[in-house]
Length: 222
Image (tube, rainbow, N blue to C red; front, side, top):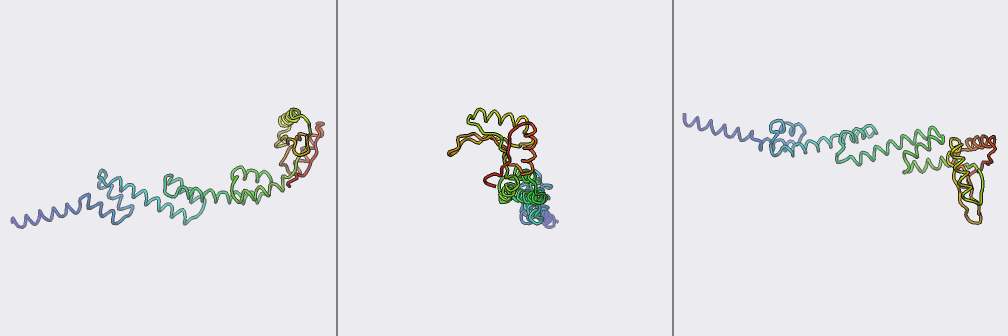
């Protein structure tokens, strides 16, 4: 009986040792899966290895989320990764890819529209990149017209007219600027720039009715 009892106790010790926290940790770490680490945390939530288990779970979840995002390779996929893993290892790269895909989609929409407001909106959102260069070139073709509004020797007079026109006709003139003298030209030129030919002619017609001098010109760089 003593021998049997001894064998029983020895077996019990072995079983307890096998199911100890350290043994469970080695088992979980060998399997290296989210499920294995989660089971370890369920069984030993306050063990010294618990923080490491949580870290391993986070890393595995991050890797899986990134793999899913790459597989989808869509704006929604990368956005989902950024939202679910704000501190993930691939967050910066995911954000770059998300921005690139969003920019490409926005540029495609702006091209399909083909009008100045759509191109301007695109440039406001995405001022950098190859698409931005294309948008500026396309916009220059559409908005390469100026409305000449007056010339003055005095900068003070030019600034006064510019301010007056901005206040009264800013909705149709867009941006009114004062171009300072350059080269042999000693005059300050007041003009509205970056307009389409149609907008420039329409604005000038309204200004002439109000007895304001104006002339539509094609921009030198257009």
